[in-house]
Image: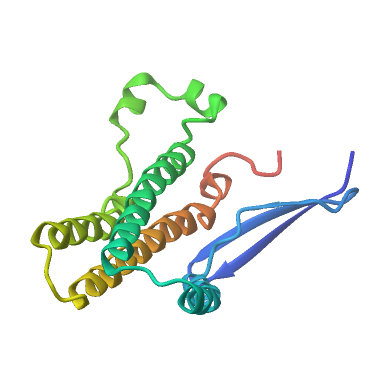
Length: 186
């Protein structure tokens, strides 16, 4: 039998768990993502990219808005795919042992978590704003830049919604700790 260590990490009322293989040192864990550090890292990465693109390329405002709308749609698709994966794991649909113990009536009565339903609104608003600006086709460039900023803020909200849903999944309590009754020493 190999040595295995079980570790826990607490932040607020949430707990994250990890296991370490004592022989190889490999760690298996779902580590929660800090939204503030993610945003700070993204801004620090975006700054040199912005400077590089600003010095070497000049984009027209309508191209910039179109690109931001495309990225908003891509983020929306990624959001839907990730939330599906998280819900499958959250509801244990990939755990055959758990599913075999559940009755079909109990499985059909489960509904998806409502925590991530509003997360895609940022990207939807971004795409709608970009489409309206393209349809209106204003003369002034600042409308295009405002639409681009709105689109990227919408993308940021969508990504933060994914991170929050993942953090809830990564830091919940293990079901063994909720077990009651019986002789625990047996």
